[in-house]
Image 1 (spheres, one colour):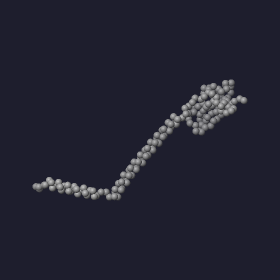
Image 2: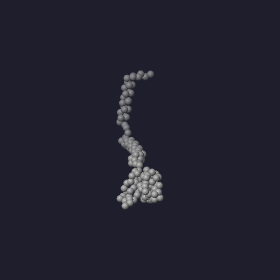
Image 3: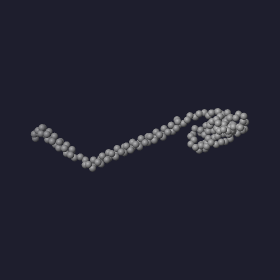
Image 4: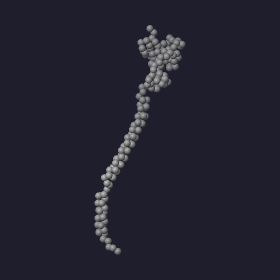
Amino acid sequence: MQDHDPVNSERALSALLREIAEADAATGASPAIRERLLEQVRGRRRARRVAAIKMYALAAGLVIATALPVWQLTSSPPSVPPSRTAVSASDSEVATAFFPLAYGTLPVTEGNIVRVEVSPAAFAALGVQPLDASRSQRDLVLADVLVGADGLARAVRFVRTARK
């Protein structure tokens, strides 16, 4: 049996551990490997940033796509019931305000006003008193119809030519 001196064994072990620590400190990754590893880390960071930017852009697009129609619906002018009083269309004509029709709430980007002759029953359909109560039910009345580019009538107003 060998006689082991615990103090000498501990010193020998400490010396060996110091040698290993010095060897580890002196060795490491070469500069080329270190640069490749750093470039890999930078590339992953860039990819995460790009993914985050894409996600935020998509979220912003969705917010705009949902907020814009809501804003348009809430910012449209309130529909005012048509006036029964006559307004001057020109020096020789008197006209009512425009009365919205079935598709009157749809936006009109381009439209035309078409003048037509209608029977006085058209007044009653909109709940309006005729401009000229002296007319008979068989006489035709002038009406201006606002027609959108899609061909749908949006509003109508009734016109009376002034007698001179």
